[in-house]
Amino acid sequence: MRWQELDIETMTNLYLYGTLETPLNKADETLIREDGYITEIQIDNIASYMSEGPGRFALGSNISVVKEFMNGGVFDAPGEYKAGEYFIKNTQRGVSLSFHLSQGGIEIEHNRHYTSGEV
Image 1 (cartoon, rainbow, N blue to C red):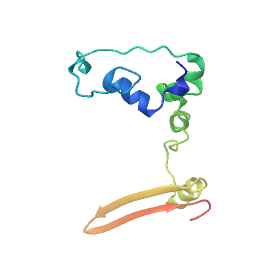
Image 2 (image 1 turned 180 degrees about the horizontal axis):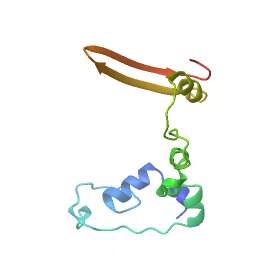
Image 3 (image 1 turned 45 degrees about the vertical axis):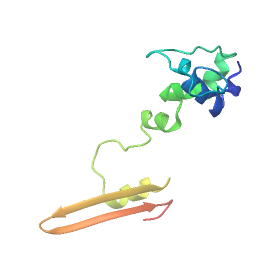
Image 4 (image 1 turned 180 degrees about the vertical axis):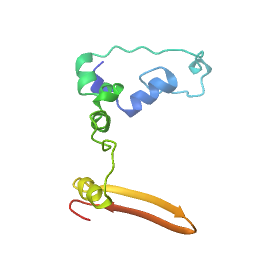
């Protein structure tokens, strides 16, 4: 089977009924399988499935936000930053900032999305 043929209907049929086709009688008791039952299918060109198809998401390292996080691109290095410098640096790509401060009866809350160059 080509991985491109694994559309949502086919995957649902495999999950619910263990077959590629939707059964005519969905109430048929033979569709109830034992716990742990596995439906096996053969995928042609598994390399393409893992590099271009849905299999690429089996490895978190293939997801762009995970790559950015693992390369340190999501968070800044530990250290002290002046608020203005931090905003200028981080708003180059746009960032949503939210914080809540409470001290001595004074409440400050801030929620805003900053875009490139905005301070």
